[in-house]
Image (cartoon, rainbow, N blue to C red):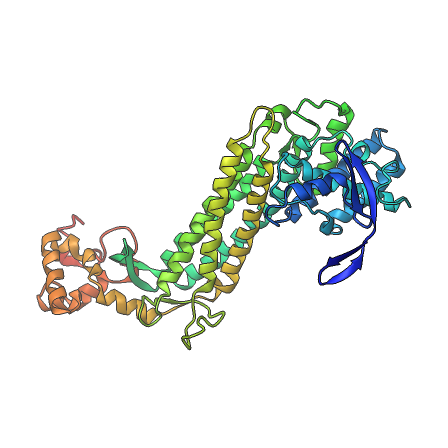
Amino acid sequence: MRQYQKGCWVEVSYRVEKDLLGEREIPREAYYGIHTLRAKENFAVSGVPVHRELIWALALVKKAAAMANREIGLLEPRIAGAIVQAAEELARGQWHDQIVVDAFQGGAGTSTNMNVNEVIANRAIEILGGTKGDYSLVHPLDHVNLGQSTNDVYPTALRVAAIKLVRELSQAMAVLQGALQAREKEFATILKIGRTQLQDAVPVTLGQEFSAYAEAVARDWWRLYKAEERLRQVNLGGTAVGTGLNASRRYIFRVVEILRELTGFGLARAENTVEATQNADIFAEVSGFVKTAAVNLAKIAGDLRLLSSGPRAGLGEIRLPEVQAGSSIMPGKVNPVIPEMVTQVAYQVMAGDAAVNMAAASGQLELNAFLPLIAHNLLHSLEMMTGAARLLAEKCVRGIQADEARCRQLLEASQGVITAFVPYLGYEKATAVVLRAVRSGRPVTELLVEEGLFTREEIEAILKPEELTTPGVAGVRHLKRFLTREGD
């Protein structure tokens, strides 16, 4: 039969497979089978594929199961070897084009599990010299899925995939933290006006602002580092509802050990596999950590946009690296596109976390049917956040430059420095000076000298960066005539 595919007509031949609903024609070259075909048709909803790291993790679970079943004598070595080879190929990225079910699917992930089972089975059949669809050689359920259920395989694979991506995100956050700390050190002596509610407040150093960003990211790194502990307990071996029905006791304990060796992750069998099969709160917890990191990245990205705004008609206290032209109509315009991208990723992650929470809350009795939604959003968010953190560090933070003159200009134009003189003048007198400065358009420091309240040397002592930005009354150690008043 000829079909029009990818812009041209191709000859397609079919094999016939059957299930409890009847017979269907499957493209002869396809590695998937009838269960996958039905799922592909039933869930043709988004066009979004199953996440590649979930496929990787499922392939490792299938490999571990085959090895365990071979070891305890439940699977012939020849069949087990073919399944192991096919699973290894799938884990390496081969045959991913054969995982054709939509990411959004009913059945708690059964369609994804069956898609993987059928692909591994048909590839194993091929390895053994047979013809795809000849399940008398290697059966998707009797052999590839031996001792398993979607309900223990899928959550286990999701935990494994999440651990891998959590590690990658925590590393990316560590890189971002280092980039921010480097700017903290570089900008340590640059004094500027701080702002609260977007209004002038009191002086800070630019380095202190970046130290706050670095500290927030450090907290995120630690949360994510600890998140792996939440994911290590798996329900593999619990089969349908966590009781282990139809799974050999020897298999149950051995399969987790083998999976731990294959992944290098500190996996352990859950103490209560019924509970681990029922509940998805662990994924909601980890998603919450990812969302919190997104909140911090959005805050940092927003601040970078503000501080670099203008650059001549805005704050312009820092200059972001110019990575691409910003306008199709305005020559010379360069936009803060990296922080803008990070902000959008952060908002998407926050939305994904809401979906994870609703899905985790919607499980009933012995199983959560909405694990595919959890898997899509959690893994997608982890991956996006990793990319966002790395790009923010590499293409933005590392190249940030300070405009020290602009920082000084805005500081001097602000009335915020008057706060440092309040301990000497009192609040009311300081307010009067500010009002005169506003009316005259002159810096408050000039008026303080002109009115004989301070000498220039005293003002310089008060306005030193180390005095203004550390605990205590600024300059009191250097203003001897005020020592008695300060009780010093």
